[in-house]
Length: 125
Image 1: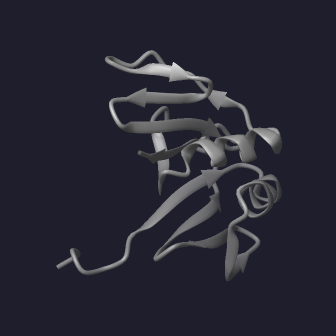
Image 2: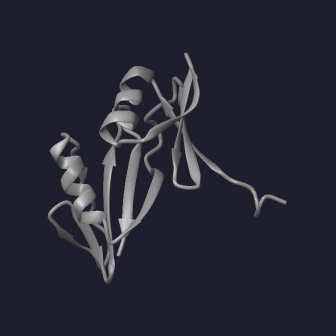
């Protein structure tokens, strides 16, 4: 029933203007044209994310959205760091930290937060 349908990551934010700057400028996402005083939508490859105003923004303590970026983790981390993004460092089993990138075997991952504290990841090899 849902296996052949698109899914949308839905991210709550308190400050929609700050979120629009972060997702649109810092992350470089392009608006899908769906915009309203209460939400914005962005295309990401063949999927999308919806950023919407909510009093519950930033309360999730787990990853809200993950981008699968192949071998581009390190250049993306460098680019985002250059734009002022601060990365999270976690103590994870069988994982070492290489700068801001967590390494487990061939997998490389980095986590950071949006202005409301939503956790975002980029993961690749």
